[in-house]
Image (tube, rainbow over the protein chains, first blue to last red):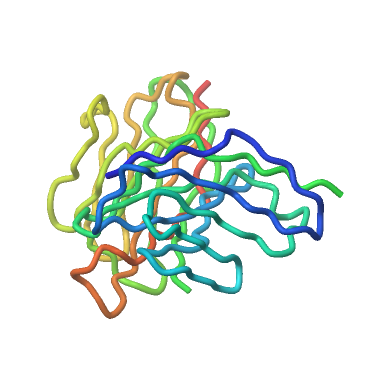
Length: 111
Length: 121
């Protein structure tokens, strides 16, 4: 599975959009991009995933570049409860389901 | 949505004893579950893949005789930390994938339990 690169940390003002980038320049055609977050002392929470089209759900939007080498997770109106570590993970559809976590981005939402 | 439940949420045990952690899929059947371990200020590390009705698959460097995994039913996997030592103190998290309408597709997301914090004294 392709490796991902994320900034170590980011800040965002409460109520503003949080844009979290992820680089996956070695992604291959059958690999999906998944986003999870982990709030302190809890298990990871699934946010969204996609292959090549942009995706949106009630939590966030996922924008994948046309060449699929990078993506951005957008939290449209960040709240203090969105403070967490956000993980971008790339996984092959032929992989039996396991996810390999990198270091993620620590997002701090500030009032 | 799919729910994965872990029990206990925290446990304290003495060095040399064994501890069992349960992971249940509450509203779906999971032929495969995954066990992770997380040390403070670090990311999750995959320990093993638990397979219903067969042996678990362990990641490199994880001792299979120390971390016993049993997946006896489609909704329950257990991790037993045998002869626990203080260095085994960690946050243990399980996960499972709801196959939904596509049991042979591995694209549906993993759902995680809320973790078990193990402290060995």
